Amino acid sequence: MSTWLGIDIGTTAVKVAAIRSAYRKVQLIGVANVEVVQAGGVAEAIAMAARAVMGAGGLGDAIAVSVEGSR
Image 1 (cartoon, one colour):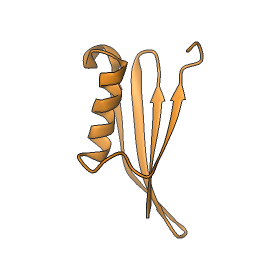
Image 2 (cartoon, rainbow, N blue to C red):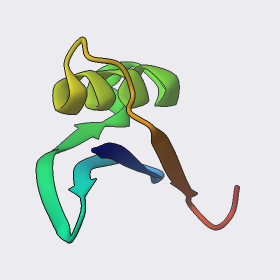
Image 3 (spheres, rainbow, N blue to C red):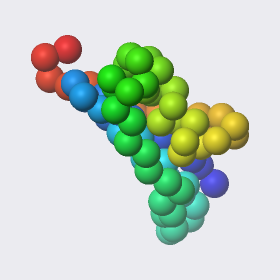
């Protein structure tokens, strides 16, 4: 099974979704939304959201990132 992590970095929040795929099957593992201001910065928000979804199990087999347009 492959685990995919999607990260959307916006101006106010970082959103993370994780899915696990196997032959003809896709399962949503979890989603998280962390406000950048509450986390103390973008890097901290990414780390908090990824940990909330994946736990201590690592970041998965592949990562896709989306960054807000002006960046």
